[in-house]
Image (cartoon, rainbow, N blue to C red; front, side, top):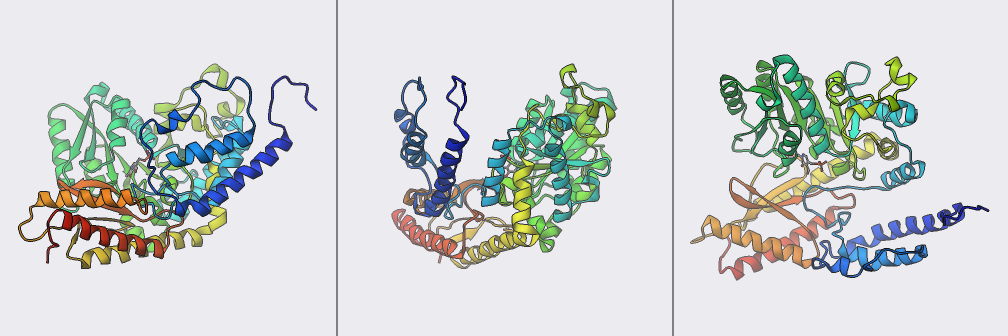
Length: 490
Ligand SMILES: Cc1ncc(COP(=O)(O)O)c(C=O)c1O
């Protein structure tokens, strides 16, 4: 019995409600395939069902679970549906869910080694394991000057590495950060430009891409040379393996060679595609990583680990800690002073940090390398199958190579049709597909044209889901073409 006036949940209640919540999650994952993939609520619908004022006294937990079903679920787009093909996947899995639950239950703050040694050491160890599993260069292992850290997102990883590169350039060239330049391509994820803004990097260039949407190293060289002539200081370049729009692959080796000539930090963003490196037969896409300063990939996209879990490695951790490390009196401790431990607060923006390594550790131990490779290979095979359907059908065209598990395609209009007609029909098809509630896709623009992205990668997606998606796309494309009064291109 507790004498506290605070109505804490007792351990017995936690056990009971906890079982109900785990049952709820398992039931949800069983039934999610039946729910309309995209939420259909109008703006304001969810808020209109919530009380205007917060509860003054506690409510029964069952009432909260009921509202979860009645108010929250209708307002969800179901990212875990096997028929979710939008954006990039945000996979979850049993071991990752339980790992996150354990992290919440332990409730530790892992900002310093001393605040929970296991939180730091498990993270360092699992990131070393990942270097081996992904075939990454040894320079990223914690046993040398480099090492890995789990960030909340690839966006944060970009910001941290931009800050490190900015500091390095400022120290080496004795210039103001406003003269520092970061280079992206026109296809780089927007998080890099945002990170540059936050990090106070003076200039950002978007380098031209080639016909396959990959950064042109010759254009990068030209841009860096011109900037140096103008008195600016090139400091950072981001190459992407698997761009967001089309999974294009920047030529990392050639980019790193250009960067080396100009003393520039090379960051590689493989947020989505990085999981593919689990499979040795796909590692040729990751050529040149031994030349780069930092590398990020998101297990929270395609590696069965719920958001948030973004793995960042640096070749020289001193550069990162130099940019982000601050040691106020209230955080001083003997372990930090000894210099023998990692304090991850100095590798990231916030001070506090969750025990994210737990879920990654659980995923690795549950699936093993063999299980994870089977997962990637299955999605790649489904992608090949879908790509072949599109390629063989004159009503569609492929808009980019599909090296991983994203297919970019659009409708082609024949005869008297113009490219603009293609955009209109493609947009109509997307609206019909998502409106059906049966599948969910998103779009992008490539070379100015509207393109649909079929991102195959939800945890529960199997061949029959992709086959059914293809049938629906085929059926609704006929309707979209007929509505527009246009025939296919034959
Ligand atoms: C290539 C690439 N980089 C970065 C990001 C941003 O990822 P995060 O949400 O982890 O910041 C994405 C998101 O899709 C991405 O595709």
